[in-house]
Image (cartoon, rainbow, N blue to C red):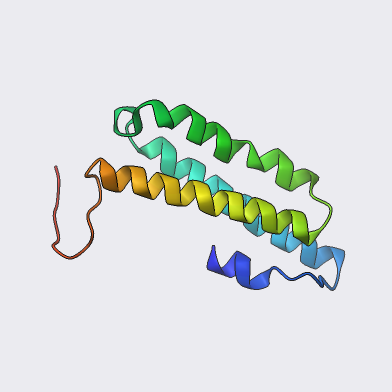
Length: 105
């Protein structure tokens, strides 16, 4: 995520740079989808399907993007979905604050 964000600029020097940024964002979205499917559905409850669709719906948008401003909007949307996922995992007790290591088996 940080690498994609650091590469995003409003002044992309070439179509290759734009494609590189687009590919990085697609990889980020793919990673989010992989993460969400590893979480048991009962942990996310009714939020699972809308969140998965929201993340998956970004892929065609990124592929149709024509400028970096669009990529920035889609990156923000992906970040928002990631934050929502992490918050849901935190509320469900799957992850903790990190202060006290806890292993749940």
